Length: 304
Image (cartoon, rainbow, N blue to C red; front, side):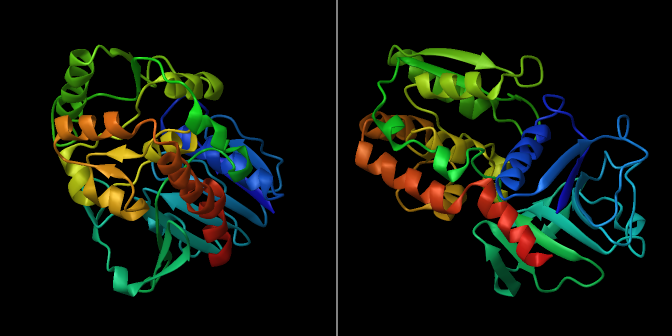
């Protein structure tokens, strides 16, 4: 199968890392993968019988073919596709509910089928298919090295990601509270912003693995929605203890995930378990079996 990723060249947006993970997974599954954009795409490419991945704000010039299937994240204009393509799949966030400028919906889990771990199909889909997808680790299952759980950690914390101090998506309070706990414990804190200083995969993983702990700290809105981003899955796959301040995220993965909405309590729990090799390897096995983009890709393939 020809898989076409449309939009967001690598490092131009955090969503580009989702594309990169899908690219890796579909190539591993034996499919041809191409990555084009509105600004850079061949006119003479055969766009028939393709599986397209696109995003509603970066699909202005995407070729529409009645033999091809389109998986659209943030599908703000489904009418564009209906009647012009073989199948449209609205790939939404795997959450309890969401209310923002792009999406307003509540997931009825009793009316969903699990296509694959982390991929739900909404049986109430009518004009087009709706799925809810959790993000995942970007490593392939065979790349997850269980010896990483025994690696000696440095007294540092590399926070790699965006920080916001204002609005309903402000994660700054939680991150600052964690940084204060680190400082009290003699742990140095460093920040890398993917928007200004994107890191290659190997550098990203090395900085993550150097860190004494790698918690997934969610803002209050994400905690209420039950957002399942890639951070915690990556951290576990790299040999870290799974930790978060989001109970809904912890519940989704496994009861062994270290969780507390109180940052100080979360820090102390992590400090007491970050060298618990048996616990970490248990979590790594769960991610290897259920939470890589191989799982997510297979879920989409089952639907089409």
